[in-house]
Length: 200
View 1: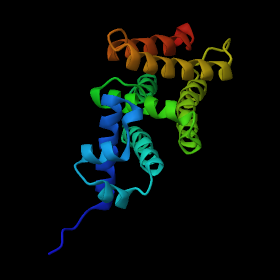
View 2 (view 1 turned 45 degrees about the vertical axis):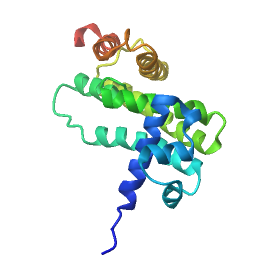
View 3 (view 1 turned 135 degrees about the horizontal axis):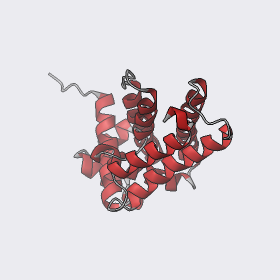
């Protein structure tokens, strides 16, 4: 009998091979030939799953976004609201080995997106989603009566967005200084600073 190949699964395996190449050797080494070798398939076979390198890189970049989204969708929010909000934001940050790998690859893609319009569109969408997460947190604090009346809501959305993105970048670039514990504590401190003293 002919071997049945799960094309969707194979595309994911090829994308993960691209991730490994990018993490080990940089985006400039993410050629079709190198990725095919890493995935253990021929260049011809890889062309069967992705017709161009751009199509492969877009799929690999989107896979990072899909996995983050899936984790957030599977979260259970059944505790204190402030803890929920912090956990939501932590899902966007590299505080585990798996998420660190995703984040390293993501920033490599982000750098390439500066010169690739197709990747740029996806990068913009994902960064809009990260900002939206910050917006959800701030608007939720307002609705729950946990937001200080002397603060500007729009400005605090931007501050929280910048904090999440900045901590993530620093964790990737300086993991010896910015680890999961520090990210957790920084978010806790910042969220507490947004609330009236009577609510903390």
